[in-house]
Image (tube, rainbow, N blue to C red; front, side, top):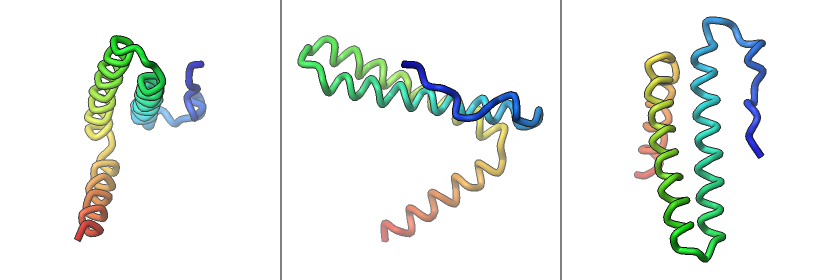
Amino acid sequence: MLSKIPINLREIKKEDMDKEILRAGIIAELDAINLYEQMAAMTGNRLIKEVLLDIAKEEKTHVGEFQAMLLKEDKEQVEELEKGREEVDERKH
């Protein structure tokens, strides 16, 4: 039941490889978060639920780690992230 990397890393230009690896890591962590949270919602066992939610929380930290590294590698991503934040802020008003 493991996710597949959504791109063929063999077809990526060498200068883009690290960014694509980091993005694939983010995708994998988000998949894991969804899986653990869905399983936690399904179980009636309190201990299993707590453990699954704790693990999901750890995966969220991993997303942050990958994102922090990606933002160091991809300045365009930094700019677009800020644009997205601004667009959301504009909608709140």
